[in-house]
Image (cartoon, rainbow, N blue to C red; front, side, top):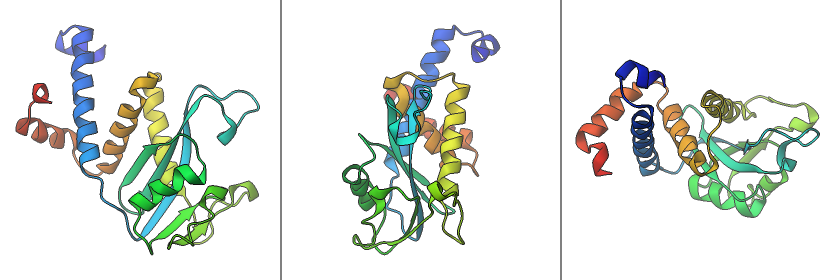
Length: 197
């Protein structure tokens, strides 16, 4: 609505332009996925309806589970999963993190087999009130979750069918947090206008 009042355009026209821009950002975000190596933080988070009183974390019904991987001092990769079981999480990790990398996780049992899969695995146990032990922590990826959730709160929530688009937009923005994202987007739009996508 602010954009519409500044530009004099109809609110729906502004919404359509923002949708086209988000779709372009999603295209750019999915185009650049390269496997991580070195030190990688892995964590899962839940998005969706407000927490039901007494239900926390993995038991929160109706939420969308997402796995996130953060290369320390680097980029983030996210993927929506059906659940947070080993069967769902392990293929994502193996597809995005090269063997012999050092992986940091929390104490969730789905990560138990990472050493057998060829990774150096360190964990912190949040259920024991342990959040940092030397280099073992998942503070970077948890900071990313806070960033994404804050962005979605500013949007006053997002429709379920558009959730992945907003998630990938947040990922693209986070991965370019030290760059001028508006200039990058404008340069890309010069190559291929919005109407061509």
